[in-house]
Length: 506
Image: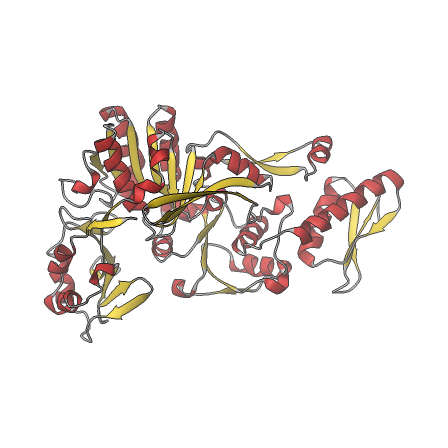
């Protein structure tokens, strides 16, 4: 089982004003502490798993903020600082004039034993990508991966440490990384350049990177992999499906492109004419979805899994977890939880089983979202505050810049969905994916009925009325008919409204 070997909690408490530190020192559960929050004009609070605790009734004053700022390292371009030779992270919130008015002090812990879940993968030399929600232990696992590769396997390991998350603050790295070397990044915007510099200047056998989040970093990752250097990294996103739907980072798993098939090939495959396919070999051979320190899901062949997902076919995974001191493994065959790619005619879960989603829009056209939700009969509420939101929907251009709203959403564990542009089709795709409707029998049957009708009308002429469907499925049926150069129209009243397939003009 994973075991905490150090959290240097006393060093973190030393930088706090005494009236905030003392209540924490007296708590028996302080070893579970995740974060301390100090916002000007509000009482300080401590965050533990599943709960927040108010530490004192006294509101935070400017002198309290200054007390902490004067005792930690320098804040860099990403508004983060640390405490030398510890893994703690202090993040600042500033007002419009740049003055610090809030602090988040996250406890950094070195944990021994987490690598046992993926030790064989790490030792195989394959490129490994780790995914998971904030706080599940991605960086902790990277830290131990570095130590094991450098100390136990004797490899030349170089860590590209953007915000000193992996090896701690100061010029001397934390002992948790062992003999691995660390390159600090002056500003997050230069991470991709430092990644390339690490390969060109220091002859590493392994490069370790935390939080690949931009297109340039994805391109640098591919360059590193092509030079034969083992790459182990984390990325923004919780699951493999997140990467498939993320145009900025999909290159990490081979990139996704739309392909138009001939009529004959589409019939042979049993698909529509426009399908999605992987563009290139994936940068990462293996992908690990981290649920917590004690359980992961391994995709052993990323390329094969992506291909299967895009074709809506089952794919193998391996679930690994601790049972006592032993690592247990279970091989499973999963069906896609549904990628919601409208070009493939998928939707899934019926209207009656859908739950309302609260969506925060960042740069996305509200009118188009509301129209798409109405057409697709999706229960949706657009909220003005990120704290109310279930998900954040944004544009690729905003995601590339990693705007504050996006950083805040990821820090809060709110899923971020990205679309290329403010088109109705892109919005519909995103909404369909957000609702993660499971099972696609309703849509599959309706499209199969439409295709059979198309073939009959082509062969025999006349017209065929299809079964009644909702507006979303009727739209997909009309699109399918159009691809075969036939005509269609909707007739009847709801809920019996249906599509008629015929040749020529009405």
